[in-house]
Image (cartoon, rainbow, N blue to C red; front, side, top):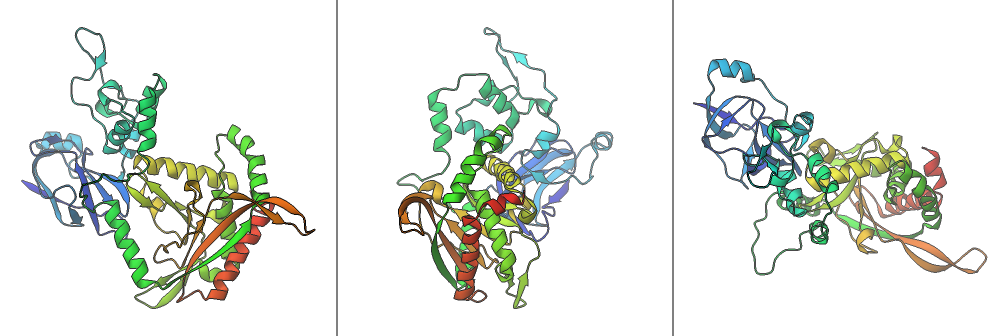
Length: 419
C-alpha cells in the first residue's frame, strides 16, 4: 500500500479545501483520472492521479482544509504491466476543472439503447465534472439525457450547450438559470462558512485590519463615453464582442496609474516596503454563485477596448461555471468593482490586499446639468468611489488620481484611439 500526499498547487499556495471526492475506497483509478475537486485561492481545480491502482482509504473529508505535503489518500498500486501501460508515477499537471475533459473532447463513448423507447442512454452512471453537474442542475437538465463526447462518455460543457440548442427549453428552466446567479440564503438554516465564502472573509478581515482605509467620491459626466459606446456597440457585436462600460473604466484607470505610479503598487508588510509595479494588471470584482472573485485583465495597457471586452467575457464565462484558472485570479495591481449593474450609486469599497487602491463604479444615470453656456442639458452621470491605503496615498494624491481617471472618461476617444 502506498500513500499519496497533496501535491504542489502553485507558487505561493500552501493549502486548499476539498470540495468533493471524485473517487471512493475500492475504486480502481487510471493514470490521469481525477481524484478530487479542490479549491485554492478562490479557484476550483481537479487533482489528477499520478498513479494507477485501487483506492484504499481517504484521509480527508469534503470541507476540510488540506496542506501541501499532507496525506490525502492511500492506494494499492496496479500490477506492473498495467502500471507501465498507464504511466505509473509519472507527474501529471494540475489544471482548472474542465480543462482535462476539454483536451479529450471528440471521443464519444458507445451508447446503449434502453428497451421499450429506443432512447440512447449510457448504461453506467453519467460521468461529468462537478462544474458541469452544477450547471446542469441550474438548468434543470438530467445529465442522463445528454450525450457525452468526452473520454468514456464524459459530459462536457460543450455537450450541455449542444443539448440546449437541440431542444425547446421550457420557461421554468430559463427561470432556474437566472435564479442561480446569487444565493440569497434560506431562512431558518445554518450554513458552514467554507470554500470561497471563508476565503472572502479571511481576505476582508486582513484588509480592514492591516489597511487604514479612506474613501474619496466624485461624480463624472460620462455623456461622451456613453455616446461612443453606443456607436461601437453594434459593429463590435457583429464581431461577437459584447461591449459594456467596464473596458472604458479599465483604460481610464490604466491612464491614471501611469500618471500616478504610487497607486499602482502594493505594500510588503514584512519588509516595510512599497512595491511600485511597471505592469498594469487590473482586477475586476465579480459576483458568482460561490461568492466574490477577482479575475485579472493582464497587460491592460497593451490591450484595446475590444480586446479588453473579449477578455472580460472569457473570464466571466469561466467564473460562472467554476472553471476559471487560478492564474487568472492573482497578481492584480489595482482593482475595479462595478456595482452599477445592480443599481448602486456610491459605495465604500474594501481594498484588495496587498494593493493600495480600488475603484467602485456606480450606476450610469441621466440628470439635467448646466453646460458652459448656462443652459440646462441632459447628461449621463456616474459616481466614482475610490478607497485608498492612507499609509501610502495621501488625500491630495487620491484626489489627483481620481481627477486623472475622470479626464480620461470625459475624453474617451483617446482611449479608443489606442486600439
